[in-house]
Length: 87
Image (cartoon, rainbow, N blue to C red; front, side, top):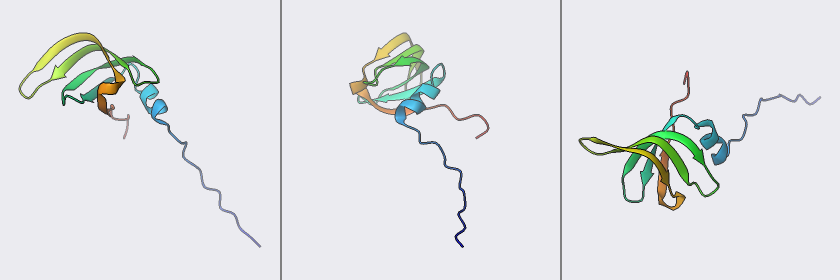
Protein backbone atom coordinates (compact mmCIF):
# COMPACT_ATOMS: atom_id res chain seq x y z
CA UNK A 1 0.00 0.00 0.00
CA UNK A 2 1.36 3.40 -1.01
CA UNK A 3 0.46 6.43 1.07
CA UNK A 4 0.70 9.73 -0.74
CA UNK A 5 1.04 12.80 1.42
CA UNK A 6 -0.50 15.89 -0.12
CA UNK A 7 1.69 18.93 0.36
CA UNK A 8 0.33 22.36 -0.40
CA UNK A 9 2.57 23.94 -2.98
CA UNK A 10 3.43 27.57 -2.71
CA UNK A 11 2.66 29.54 -5.84
CA UNK A 12 5.62 30.28 -8.07
CA UNK A 13 6.27 34.01 -8.07
CA UNK A 14 7.82 35.58 -11.12
CA UNK A 15 9.61 38.93 -10.87
CA UNK A 16 6.70 40.57 -12.71
CA UNK A 17 4.30 39.27 -10.03
CA UNK A 18 6.40 40.75 -7.23
CA UNK A 19 6.70 44.12 -8.96
CA UNK A 20 2.96 44.15 -9.75
CA UNK A 21 2.18 43.52 -6.08
CA UNK A 22 4.22 46.64 -5.24
CA UNK A 23 2.25 49.01 -7.47
CA UNK A 24 1.05 52.09 -5.56
CA UNK A 25 3.51 51.29 -2.75
CA UNK A 26 6.79 52.93 -1.82
CA UNK A 27 9.88 51.26 -3.29
CA UNK A 28 13.58 52.10 -3.24
CA UNK A 29 15.55 51.81 -6.47
CA UNK A 30 19.35 51.58 -6.57
CA UNK A 31 20.85 52.84 -9.83
CA UNK A 32 24.10 51.99 -11.60
CA UNK A 33 25.36 55.39 -10.47
CA UNK A 34 24.90 54.12 -6.86
CA UNK A 35 22.11 56.67 -6.25
CA UNK A 36 19.11 55.57 -4.19
CA UNK A 37 15.71 56.78 -5.33
CA UNK A 38 12.59 56.31 -3.20
CA UNK A 39 9.08 56.86 -4.54
CA UNK A 40 5.65 55.38 -5.11
CA UNK A 41 5.70 52.85 -7.93
CA UNK A 42 2.99 53.99 -10.34
CA UNK A 43 3.78 51.72 -13.31
CA UNK A 44 6.47 49.65 -15.05
CA UNK A 45 7.01 47.79 -18.31
CA UNK A 46 8.76 44.66 -19.62
CA UNK A 47 12.08 46.56 -19.81
CA UNK A 48 11.88 47.47 -16.10
CA UNK A 49 11.34 51.12 -16.95
CA UNK A 50 9.78 52.50 -13.77
CA UNK A 51 7.46 55.45 -13.24
CA UNK A 52 7.72 56.74 -9.65
CA UNK A 53 5.59 59.51 -8.22
CA UNK A 54 6.71 61.76 -5.38
CA UNK A 55 10.25 60.45 -5.84
CA UNK A 56 13.22 61.60 -3.80
CA UNK A 57 16.93 60.90 -3.89
CA UNK A 58 18.27 59.55 -0.63
CA UNK A 59 21.71 61.01 0.07
CA UNK A 60 23.99 60.41 3.05
CA UNK A 61 22.85 63.41 5.04
CA UNK A 62 19.78 64.65 3.18
CA UNK A 63 16.84 63.84 0.96
CA UNK A 64 16.30 65.71 -2.33
CA UNK A 65 12.75 65.91 -3.68
CA UNK A 66 12.56 64.96 -7.38
CA UNK A 67 8.81 64.82 -8.02
CA UNK A 68 7.54 62.38 -10.64
CA UNK A 69 10.31 60.49 -12.47
CA UNK A 70 10.76 57.84 -15.11
CA UNK A 71 13.76 55.58 -14.55
CA UNK A 72 15.09 53.70 -17.54
CA UNK A 73 15.33 49.99 -16.78
CA UNK A 74 18.94 49.79 -17.99
CA UNK A 75 19.96 51.89 -14.99
CA UNK A 76 18.28 49.76 -12.33
CA UNK A 77 20.48 47.34 -10.39
CA UNK A 78 18.30 46.72 -7.32
CA UNK A 79 14.70 47.16 -6.19
CA UNK A 80 13.77 47.16 -2.50
CA UNK A 81 10.11 46.33 -1.96
CA UNK A 82 7.84 47.21 0.97
CA UNK A 83 7.57 44.72 3.82
CA UNK A 84 4.61 42.39 3.60
CA UNK A 85 1.78 43.03 6.04
CA UNK A 86 2.02 40.75 9.07
CA UNK A 87 5.41 39.40 8.04
